[in-house]
Every structure is written in structure tokens, then in C-alpha cells.
Amino acid sequence: MKATARAHTNIALIKYWGKRDEELILPTNNSLSLTLDGFYTTTTVEFRNDLTNDIFYLDNQCISGIPYQRVTQFLDLIRQLAGKHIFAEVRSTNHVPTAAGFASSASGFAALAAAGSKAIGLSLNDKALSRLTRRGSGSACRSIYGGFAEWQKGEKKDGSDSFAVPIKPQDYWDIRVAAVVLHADEKKVSSRVGMKRTVDTSPFFKGWVDSIPQDLEQIKAGISERDFEKVGSVAEANCLKMHATTLGANPPFTYWYDTTFTVMQHVQKLRDKKIPAYFTIDAGPNVKVLYLPENEADIKRELESIPGVRDVILSKAGQGITYL
Ligand code: ADP
Ligand code: DP6
Ligand code: CO
Image (tube, rainbow, N blue to C red):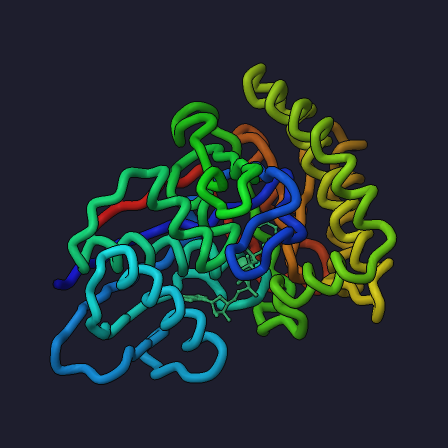
């Protein structure tokens, strides 16, 4: 009853920001992402009769508190699905900074769902696996697939129609992402807490939700035409709208640092120099820059030259879940 799986993180081009049901993790809007090959999690789950509770090691450290509870509650769902009452030892390694806005919850819960469901003897198809994964962390349900994926919010109250579907495979289009590392420390406001505060208090939240259908339609058209400018500009604008909602919350907050803003402006200046590049930012200060392979050397040099930039990690489109 042991299995190991690897999942890659994904970067949302149309963001998931807001839940309509917190228990079931049902979103208020569809979201669309690109899975990244540069950042991933490898997780081994072993269900054992001798255990009297679950144990969770992350990067060789025994974990307690909220991160432990999130794992053990997720294992409860797997046990429920399988109809088995047995505890597990989970060992996970993040090849991505944890809780810093690099989507560790996405690769983390996708790897846990895949390894856990296999270890307990379930054989779930992609749709069922994505639906299960969603319960660990919403963004994780998109990491089941490589390339571009869309999380369909669904309409049903029980969440049975809320899961991600593949849009285009990993090898469809060589579009790249530079992760600009400014700070890899854990964020003060988790994605979960930040989006709840926004839904509950930000007057801008309605505008955000209303703007999604058009953004989705345009980005999907851009992807099917392989139109980099269209995809990049829609993604950048969507990111700015999401972050604007946090400024309207009570109490207001932002994930940005001064250096975040510096990088954003630099990316916009690159376009003036005819280097096509667009940014997007998840719930954290670090910036991801979309670019095309022919501009890789310029992009890396330019981004590394910005004061405050600690590292620039280049990534291609990544693959979906793999079992090791
Ligand atoms: P991020 O930007 O990294 O996704 P979040 O606030 O969304 O930040 O989620 C971070 C949380 O995700 C961690 O505090 C932990 O609870 C969970 N997490 C991260 N990595 C893993 C992992 N490998 N296995 C299980 N849970 C993980
Ligand atoms: C800004 O999936 O981390 O990265 O569902 O509460 O675990 P929970 O939140 P999470 O939120 C991700 C928010 C985002 C946008 C995105 O990835 O779509
Ligand atoms: Co997350």
C-alpha cells in the first residue's frame, strides 16, 4: 500500500480567486493555467496497519499545525472514497519554495492525491483525480494535466462537476516562463485566507468575477491561434485585476513588494524595446514572466539586471502527473 507520484506546479493565466464553497473548495470563476516543468513535488504515501495517526514529512521535517491538518483531512477523503480506515506516512519533497507564491499547494496536493489514491488501491481517471485533488487546494486540480488546463467551476452544489480539463498538451506550444525570485519566504497571508477576505469584504470582487468570461474567451482564442501577444496581454491584465481586489479588502492587503512593482515596470519596458514579454503574479511577491524561446537570452539578462532580483529560474511547459 505504497506509491510515489510527481506533480508539477502550474501558473494561472486566468486566476482562481474566490470560493463559493470553502468546505468543498468550489470556485466563483473558471481559471486557466500552464503547467511548468521547472517546479514540482514528489510525494510517497504508505498506508500502514501499525500507525495510530497520519505522519507527514515535508523536506525531511516532521510537520504539525495547519499544514499537517490539511494533509490529514485530505487523507480522510481518500480513506472515505476507498472505504478503508488506515493511517499513512507521507513523505514529500518540494522542488519549489513552500508557501511563497510559487504554487507549492498545487504541486503538493496533486502529488499527494495521485500517490495517496494509488497507494490505497483506487484507480481514478483524470477527471476523478482532478475532482479529488481540488479538495486539497483548488489550484492543484489543474496540475493533473501537462500544458494548458482549465478548471471548470461547475454549477452543482455537491461539486461533482467542478474539476479541471486539458486544453492543450505540453508539446502544443513552446511558451516559456521565467520565475523572478525576489523573496522565497513564506507569505503572511495564505492564498486561502487572502481570497476569503477578498470575497467577504472587497467591493471590487464583483467586478473581478464579472470580467472573467471575456478574459477566458480571449485567452482561449489566443492559445488556439498561438498568438503570444494576445495570450500575454490577457494574462497580464487578468493578474492586475485579481491583485486590485486585495487593495479593496478590509483590512486591505497586497502581496506585492516594491521590487515586485519594479519588475512589472521593467517587463512593460521590454515590450517598448520590441522584446515580447508579459508578467503574471500569484499570491506572493514574485513575478513570472511569459516569453518565447527566441528571446530567452535577452529575457534572462534583462531580468537578472534588475536590482532586488535574487534569481531567475527558466521553465518550459511541464507534464502532468507521473508515477515513479
Ligand atoms: P503557495 O503559493 O505555495 O501555493 P499556499 O498558501 O497556497 O502557497 O499554500 C501553501 C501550503 O500548501 C503550505 O503551507 C502547506 O499547507 C501546503 N503544501 C505545500 N507543499 C505541500 C506538499 N508538498 N504536500 C502537502 N502540502 C503542501
Ligand atoms: C493566486 O489554490 O493556493 O495562485 O484553494 O485555498 O488552497 P486554496 O488556494 P490556492 O489559490 C491559488 C490562487 C492563485 C491563483 C491560481 O493559482 O489560480
Ligand atoms: Co497555493
